Image 1 (cartoon, rainbow, N blue to C red):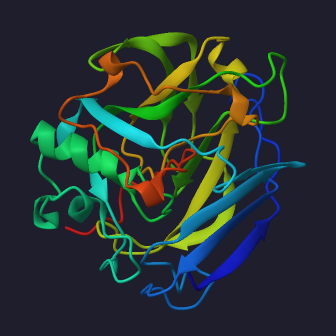
Image 2: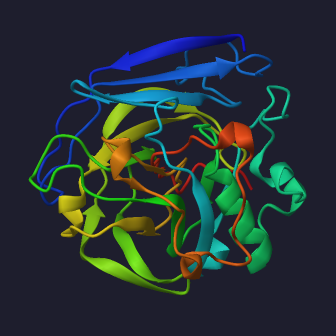
Length: 306
């Protein structure tokens, strides 16, 4: 497939907002698919991406997570447990599917016109779909008010290093860098009654580092920048396998969720225990999408189109 590529450099270590091993990528690469409606191969505040931008790799020092290397684990199930009126799936302003990656609603046979529906079967399935590809343009839009939702991955991850180390297992991209969010790791239970790791991680505005990637999506009337952060399983106080994460936020916009084992050998198969899968919010990734997703988080809660 013809595409353009860009490398972004310059992410740094984070401060004390996290428990132990919060780190930032030293480089991120992405591609613009052939047929995309984006203008150019780079973005800015005046020329943001409005169609799919596909994540290719993230480096943490000498460790590189690659879309072709088996380190990105896809989201296969989602469940909104609180604040349904404050969350909905999201896609790029100009995502017409002309690049071969339709919007998250179309992929699962839903009408994009109903994107604000709070019907659980529609909402959960659309959110799972939004986090089932490598596109940095798909995720969730947070309305005013708080919400809680869970994302379950297609495989479990164990810590590649029980000590505090510089390579995270969970990577989050956040849009706008201006909302409060709490992240919990899911280690068992069922989709509507998860069992969590001992520690939760609270991310305050300013906790992330800027990525240089500007995007404009359907619910947002202007461009904002994606920011990024990495979490080691030590931050959650667990040596157990984690199967997903739960995010509680006061309106953040999250774009893509990724679980990233340094060593693919720590990626546990067969897939997640069936009890964690939400019957109304579980998808089967397309074959071309089977090697996906680390973890993106986004947060703008105003500048939204109504």
